[in-house]
Length: 330
Image 1 (cartoon, rainbow, N blue to C red):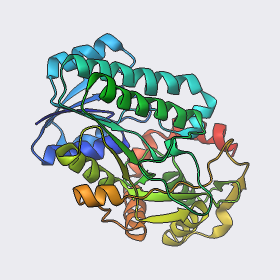
Image 2 (cartoon, rainbow, N blue to C red; image 1 turned 90 degrees about the vertical axis):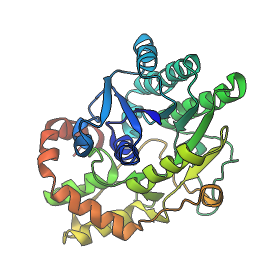
Image 3 (cartoon, helix red, strand yellow; image 1 turned 45 degrees about the horizontal axis):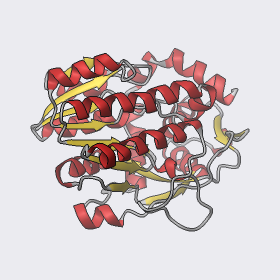
Image 4 (cartoon, rainbow, N blue to C red; image 1 turned 120 degrees about the horizontal axis):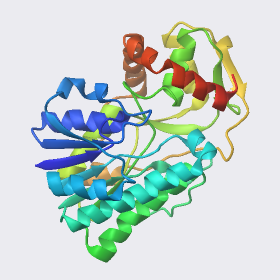
């Protein structure tokens, strides 16, 4: 099977590439290698995939890639993905996530791709209160520039299935975590700041709720969808447990033997969604997938990984500190 993975040098995309290569698939990676992309994530499969250094907004270059590689399957992970950055620079997100997806869909249509896996997010549904769950039939109600851009990409894929019969499958994962995540996201921020005994910024009162999904479980779900997912369908892919942000922080501090006095509550993110929660009965029933890694196991593995890969973190320290200062004003 010939599979083109966009964003394959990113956090979730690279986890999928590693699994796809182990499946014996013929894999190509398309990645712009922006600040969050790093081919080091693929070092264990080095030499076993083809690489295209291309930004999806470069329309001709995208068409050239598909003409050259002629994939049977496209798995579209590539996206600007951080809500804080989208608040600071919405245009970048609209261009990358909407225009980039449009270019890829058009190229996939032109070169008759047999299956297009469009990776969306649970954030397209908007927020919930203390009760209830989103299903694949829930209406979309995004609230941040990031989630709006992902909803646009999500709906473009659905439109291309309906209008042009492009065989699109939509995947909406919950918050991922694990090794190799760029340290702008909550969990690696906590780990690295705790390691340095620096104040750990927590938005608002820390009561926001997420379903945390270990990245290898997410990649496995996408692998199953590539093999057996039904064209035109949507699949929610969620972690096994809901956790409040403050619970996540305290769990990591306990694992690292650090005091809770490091916690520093900061001004809440504008438009911060309170809770995301999805039902995943559909993918369990139709594809026999469910997450294998519980939060305690996954977070322990994640902490251990970062503590043993500080050389990687050190390479991006300068960019990272600028971002932390800009967003958290620490």
